[in-house]
Length: 230
Image 1 (cartoon, helix red, strand yellow):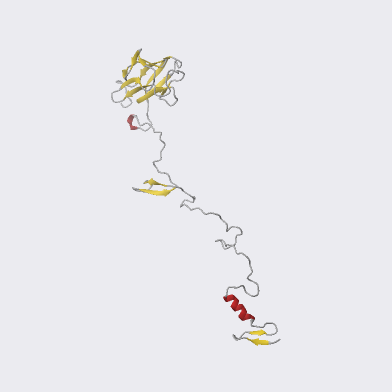
Image 2 (cartoon, helix red, strand yellow):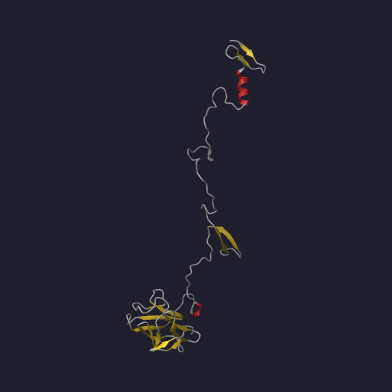
């Protein structure tokens, strides 16, 4: 063994190394090379996940999505929410929340006495001739449209001479306490006590109206003697 000392004071075996191996290692480290003892040959590196690398396979989460304040991704467009439930005045945006005034288009009648949904009967039509003979139909305050469609106020089934929608109408005026009958959008003529009706006419107890081939007798409940507003 031939012990030698380099310029930096490192000792090494001159029979094994022609130059100081420690100086060579420091030089290689300064130039970014792997250490001479081969410990740096790790191959391609992989990203380490935010969990500290302790969970295998968990780093590749794919494309990330924005997170909403309510725990749902992609809340979409925001809409204003009106004040209420502890909020006073003004509107503000909240992701994913519908407007509080987002109601269905269907409305409820506000009728007698200002009570929501209270729309009592004010009279009847009774079929005395036609396919629906013997059937009675409720009349409510305001306009009542007559037709074959199910959503008509007065649906007369079986008479194909009656239009599906708004063939004629019967109305009760709560202010004047009178009933009227007249044509609407129907193509065939409507009659009152056998006479053609071109414009709405006032009707009275036991008058007979004709729509299509159906005859309906009018039976009032409300009028001068009684009204739900009394």
